[in-house]
Image (cartoon, rainbow, N blue to C red):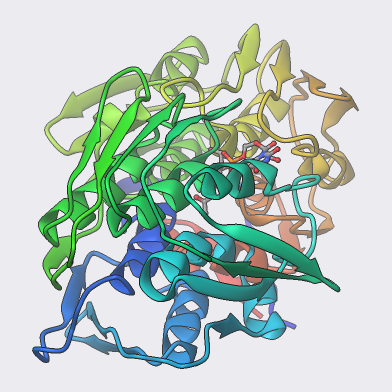
Length: 421
Ligand code: UD1
């Protein structure tokens, strides 16, 4: 089992390039299934990160008869015809977001058989909103053991759908299914995350008709056919924020490049309140950290454009060594504080109760053997270790590898001492 070894307390200085967004790439890969490749044309995805979750999505596509190959840093996908509309359990379990293939399979094959995505990393992750929305479009579901049989007995048609909560995955599934459905779908209270806009951008580049309104209403007109296209995935806002946090906790001076600062706006006031100075210049953000960070009063996660739940753990690592007390309120997932206990093993003072976490900043963390609990929680442990005198060992790094491309190599470029054991 691979581990990271981090020797901390070195300020990080220099430039880090932000790679493509995993959470945008995954639904786009599902969408590539909808493209008609009979002419031999492929979808060509640029800036697609090479991550284990992306590989898991490629394996699902391959299982469904598609070809997915890397060529000169781009991912080429040629959709194929499979008589098997079933995603086997081991592929569903490889990646929690495999559920986004549901909408794509229904659009393409009018049927799908899948098991529920495995585990529960951040608390229960139900799919009731996905299913209720797709039912309105003419899909019928039958639960079968630990699996789900989905079929369209008549036709897949447009519908008027109101989501009770702007779920990212449910919005993606509706957009995917509606793109090849008959007629128009209007989805109200859809998620407004940049990854949704990227999915819409990809589908429109393939000849689809997806229109997003500022208030979260999505209009999708089903088309007869989608054609393969060349597309570039947006930069990963959470990776950008993580890199900035690495600079902030070490008293460093980090510039992230190839970023979309407009997608990270909700986090900037928090970093500034902690004493960091930020400079935005086109696709770059520079952060100059103070000697010691200051606590922030409140950090409250909200759907986009609010403070992202995925940035909570990285920012929590900063507050663990900041001067003063910070209160976190997590409004998206039930169990987003698993990293808190691991941070406490390094000397952090964090108490959690339900959706609230109270972090009393300590002067210094100490090295320990800690384990990643989930993707962003793992990133928080790396951030904390960078500020710790001595050597911290971080286990279960497969979680980090799901969402960060070559993290140790990246951080070494800016002066971090981090190796894989
Ligand atoms: C996506 C992101 C994840 C991010 C999250 C919120 C991907 C691959 N993952 O996850 O990194 O943290 O958005 O920005 O893009 N819910 C239900 N019923 C449903 C669907 C969701 O109760 O049918 C609940 C969930 O349990 C959760 C909340 O709604 O509490 C938000 O979930 P959702 O927005 O769907 O997140 P994901 O798409 O799973």
